[in-house]
Image (cartoon, rainbow, N blue to C red; front, side, top):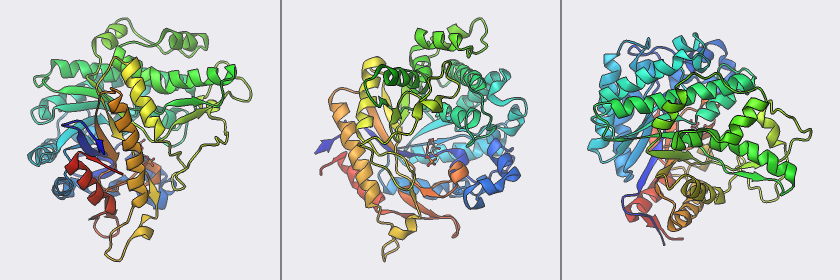
Length: 460
Ligand code: BGP
């Protein structure tokens, strides 16, 4: 029997831009996603855009009732910045009413809300001023954060500032999957620096807010790095992947500082960001109370074929190599490696001073999932149950070994829209039929998970 600690948080996660719909309704101003879809709809799978996400804006009460039926005791979503403050300054009363009602509904049904402030959804008005590249974004974000704490802090006691800021930077500043799709690692570093400063200033705003009796965190994609071999060149590549993808944000958010070695590398490579006097104190004085860890797959790293110094694109570290043990989810192309969850759990315990943390995302995306529908109209997602069991078993092992993990959230509760992939890959405990008024139907995994939660564990 895999028995989990008393009070363990069982839940699921989504985000405002991926689930709310109503992208331009009731005063919300456009984000980069809304504008990008307007400009290049053909880039989005089946040309389904952000206005068509799962309509939680209207259906949240039904979702919360379903969460209750599934025994979930926690749930993460985000606030849409451009809904709450459409022009960055003035409060949208309809947004306040919506979020207050949504969050209260969760609490009233025994589902603890964990509310995140930024999930890749940059307001367009701010993007036009340079987005995260412009230092002024930092103060705009800190203001937005202070308004959110003020408006919802009586209901919400667990907060996050950013979801996977590194993914946003990787895909938008040295990749093509997020706006503004530029390829410039130096600019990416500056964007990362401003994001971290915005995070730290939001933490400061939280500490100063009148409802500071809660806790605040950051949600990071933490994929453990495994070198191809113990050869010095592969170990060197793994070290830099680890600095860039794990330590840069984690060290700063938890310890309030960057690794000296990382700072030296950036300087040597002429990649160091522009900073201002006083920034260091802001980082040092505003560390998080807990960490959210999104874990999907590990990072397999090897030395680039041609050693490049300085690193101009970290993707060079992921040169294709067929790892013998690789098990791939054929739908999403991502590796399935449950052991990675144990390794990152122990790393958080050992290198981050026992910081409390939880799995804020883990999950398996499957395309054309209606293939697995049975005669009763239920999707038999045994592959998802197996995926969750395998990861929970490894997580349990880490908890037994002392890692202070307090929860497990699946991505996602009800199938949601996913950026350029739109509804291609489904992740939810609930199916959402986008052609039938976003109708929700439980999948097999939701019944299985309801039982796991009731027993606070499972046996296999
Ligand atoms: C994470 C994001 C989510 C979600 C998830 C699944 O990186 O935080 O927003 O999208 O991945 O990935 P995808 O939808 O790309 O398959």
